[in-house]
Image 1: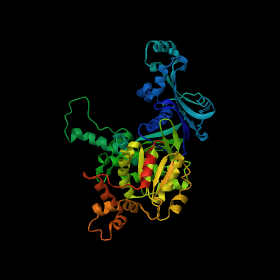
Image 2: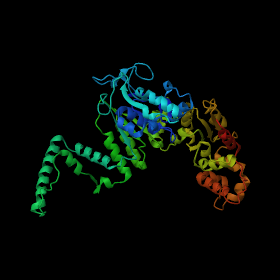
Image 3: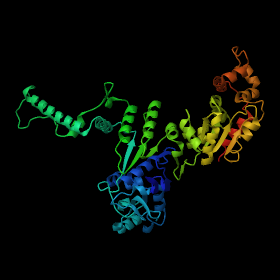
Image 4: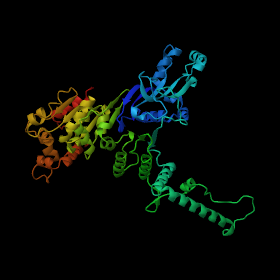
Length: 528
C-alpha cells in the first residue's frame, strides 16, 4: 500500500509530505487547499500517462509562487525549479520481475516507490539560457517529463510493469453513459458465467442473422446495391453494447443523478483486485440524499483490502468513516487525526448528528449547549462585534453538554481556539471548574458559565438579566405559570420570540446580554 506521498513545486504545494493510513484516508479542507490535486497526483504517478500530463500542460502543474520567485531572482540555469511527485510504498507491494526499490528519490534513502519528475531538458540548455535573458516567460517548453521507479527504471501507461492498479471515481461525472454501461456489464457478468454468456452470444448472433434476412424477405427493402444491410453481431462485446437494465420498468439511463452516482460507485468499487488496488474518490456526496449517503458509506466500508482516498465536504462521510482516518489539509501542511482518542473517534462515527467537519475547518469555534443558545448566539455575537461569526472564521456549533469534551479533545489535537458556553446546573464548582480542569490548562480553550449557582441555565440567566423587558414585552396571557416557566418548557420557541423582538424596527437595543456570554464572545473574537 502507499505509505506516503511527497509533493514538491506541485500546484498549491511547494513542499508537502503526507503519511497515509493503510486502509482509508479522508481529505478535508477548505475549497482550494488541494484535495483534488492530491488525488490527481496519485493517479498521475500510478498511471504513468504522458498524454494526461501533456493535456494539462506543465504550466498548470507547477507551483506559481516557485516560478515567480525564480523569475524575480538571478535566473541561474542551475537553480531552475523541478516538480516532483513521489509515492512511497510498503515493502509488500514489490512486484515480480520489476524493481521499485532504490535511492532515486528526494529523500535520498533506499525505499520502494515511484517518481514523476518534470525538469529542464539538458538537450536545450542553450535555448533555456537565451529565453531567460530575453524574456520574462518561464521556459516550460524546454522541460521534460519522466516516470521512474526509485530504482531508476522507466515506465509509462503502455508498459506499466509496477502492476499497482487504481480506480479514479469522480461523482460529478459518474452519471455518464460510460459509467452506466460499465454497471450493466458488471451486472451481466455477475448474473451469468462464461458458459452462459457464450450460449447467449451464439443465440444473439443467430437471431441477428435471421433478423437481417428479414430486411429483404419480409420487409422488402430494395436490393439494388452490391452492399447488403446486416445487424452487427460478431462478438460478445457487441451484445454487451446492446443490453441495458431496468429498475421498476425505468431504464437506468433515465434514473436520477443520485441513483446514477450510487450505481457508478458500486461498479467501480466492485472492480477486480490485482496485486494492489487503490481507490480514489472525488466528493462522493454529490447528488446524494441522506439515505443514499448511508448506502454509499456502507458500500465503501464493505470494500476491505483496498486502500481508499476520499476528498469530501460531507460531515457524515468524514465522521461515519472514522474520524481517525481524516487528514486535515491546508496549503502548507497536513494533519492526521489518527492520534484522536479511540472512544472519541467512535463517538463521531455513531453520533446521530455531527458538525465535526465545520469544526475542523473553522479557525475558531463557539460550542453551545442546545437549540436556544444556537438560535440567539449569532445575534449576540453580531451585537457585540458588528460581525457575524463566520465573518471572523468562527464556527457556531450546538453539540449538547455531554459532547463538549469530544470536541475539546479534537481541539487539543488541532490547537484550535474554542469557547464553550454552558450551564452550571446549580453547581459551578463541580460542573465547570472540576469537570473541565484538564482543558482549561490549554491557552486556546476557555469555558464560560454563570458562576452564580442560582443562574442555573441559559434561560434563567437571560430572564434574571432582563426581568422587566420580558414582563413588559414578551409576556402573553397564555403564560399562566409565568414567563420564566414558559421559557424553561419551550426553550427553542422562547428563543425565537426573543430573536424576533430584537429584530423589530423599533427595538432600541435594551436587552442585556449576560456577562458570561459577553466574555465568551469578546475572548473568541480576538485574533489568535
